[in-house]
Image 1 (spheres, rainbow, N blue to C red):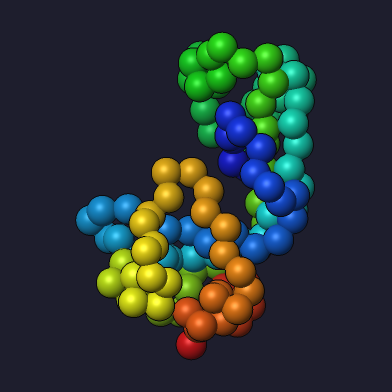
Image 2 (image 1 turned 180 degrees about the horizontal axis):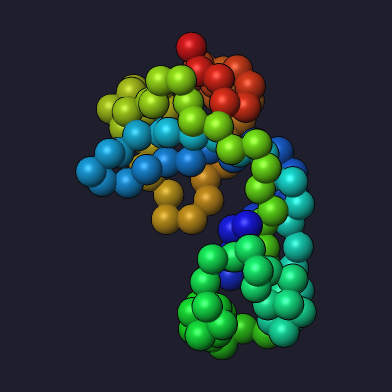
Length: 121
């Protein structure tokens, strides 16, 4: 379960996981199973046993908001070969590691060697 303050533009599909410094590589993929936006009291009830954070941390993260988003993930897979930041920038001109979400087209994922969830050339 991933918690977010803002809802992503998609409610299903493939997500790529980028590991920040010192690793600085694209390292894994997962399937977005469901995206849910709920009032905070209902969101907490639905994620408290799986979110991996305390109620205090949850409240601090969502401070100032009336609702929040949970992203249910499935099929997390490490890439066979992580893709370095250098290679990402060579393949994807202008790439900057995202602070939140960054959307990728299927053609670019294929160019990076990511054919399907968890597999890389």
